[in-house]
Amino acid sequence: MKKTKLVLINLLIVGILIPVLYTLIAIGSFTKSPKVEIQNNVNADAPLLRVAADFDFSPYSFYDENNQVSGLNVELMNEIANRLGMKLEIVFTDWISCKKLLQAKETDLILGLEIFSNLQGVLKTIAVSKDQLLVFGKNAINDISGLKDKKVGLITNSVLEKNYDLNCEYVPYYTNTDVLDAIEHGDIDYGICHGSVAKKILEKTNYKIIPSISLMNSYPAIGVRDDLPELRDKINNILIQLGDEGFFTKLDNKWLIKFTNKVTVQDVLNSDAKLYFIYFILFLFSIFLTVFFLQNDYRKEILMKKSLEYQASLKKQNDMLTSIANVYFTVHAINLVENSVKEIQSSTQARLYVNKTYDAITQMKSVIQNTVIPEDIEMALTFTDLTTLPQRMENKDSILAEFRGTEIGWFCAQFIVMNRDDSGKVTDVIFTTQSIDEMKKEKEYLLKLSRYDELTRLLNRHAYESKIKELIENDINKVSVVVLDVNSLKATNDKIGHHAGDELIRGAADTIRECFNNIGSCYRVGGDEFLVIIEGDDINLESILENFRTLIDKWKGNLVDKLSLSIGFATFNEIENFTLTKFSELTKLADKRMYEDKALYYNRLGIERRR
Image (cartoon, rainbow, N blue to C red; front, side, top):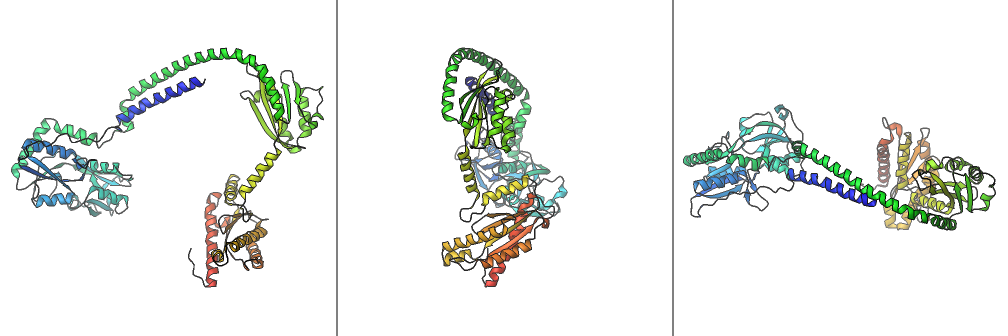
């Protein structure tokens, strides 16, 4: 059986890994970012073509992981420069600086200029790609009216700001990253960015920013200095040739479709649904064949083992009875078919109520009724009912239960299967008892220690949290809370010593216990913090607190003369529709009143204290 399980587990692991690995490959999890494959390969002494590009404009232009210029426009310009026979020089900076370089005639071309741009001193080529200007934000909008009276970020001197009145407050930024950062940090409500550019930036962040509506299509072109019209015409002719050659289709597929528009798992499942279905059928068939052959081998092994097991069964039974008799308080072998019992080891008390002329069922009832305390008799009779035992042990080798005896205290009773018939029904069992009274007492003692604070012997925070769960489980909502805090504890520790501070804490615990122990549960929940939970709605808190203050005034220690506690209380009827799920509101209200009381205490002493 272990071999069968191991083979099946390995088969399942391999069978699951194959489609998972295929899906990961299909969505591009192992695909690296595209590289610039077209390089500028003209002679070093060729005329220079100077180009300015926005470094924050991925996938069109950006620095890759090796800090090299990369992107759709970079690869396009390498091809254009090669066809012009010119040496290419690209300067990467922000978009505003790119414009200034072109207007100052310090560069010949500028990449990524919109064909509808009204930038002065520039000629535009035909469009080299297509994108969309999208509205990005933490919340989507369904209509352009959603931008009304909002703060909307865009690139400085954008044509949108000058030509489109969206009834919003435009906020200019130097880069697309700056726009998205401002949305994330709440400086603006929305931002307008190129869709593909913003998506690449958001891939690198954990920003919860989403695109919503599209303002318009974007057609990035190449901007040429207005004193170089011949250069613009040459570039246009080259762009037309590239379009005819299918060059732009390849670039778009490489940089905009595969690089920007990531394939999702759902996309792969939809496109390869038939492949996944065929694989699933074949995988199930392989599992079926594997199970069939393994089970056949397993049956052969079982048949071989049975003969050996039968020969060893009698010896095993004798050895078991001998070892059991040395461990347990009483041991009896019971034949359920013959309804007979054989004593292997017994106690004097049990023998008093055994009449060997009776059958096993009658003897069992007699012993239980006379050796188990009245509160546990019904449960013990149900557990030791031999008429229902075969059904209860149908798929079990042993069952046990704990009861309290009239003389030995807590004991554990256990049935252990000895034999089954061919149908698997239990025919022989061993019934044992074992004293666990000392263990129970030790467990109860340790449980008590875990619930009480060592210094004050009040219930601790663990007990407090357990009490809250108990109240919730029992649906008890009528509760009141008293919060108490020792005053001047730090001053006492500093001036007299921590022994005096401990005396104050114990004194506080003693007065709390004396006043509240009969009406509620008292807890030490912090160093000098105490809390009392009172159940019911018939309490007079004012009277109780007045009594408590009287006890505090009477207290006197060996190291400290006076004890002072700040007190705050709250009852369930002060909170609307109160349930135990609002218990923290109740404690916060009591806590607030306690701090108000503490403030009055320090004000009376003329001490300015902040907490």
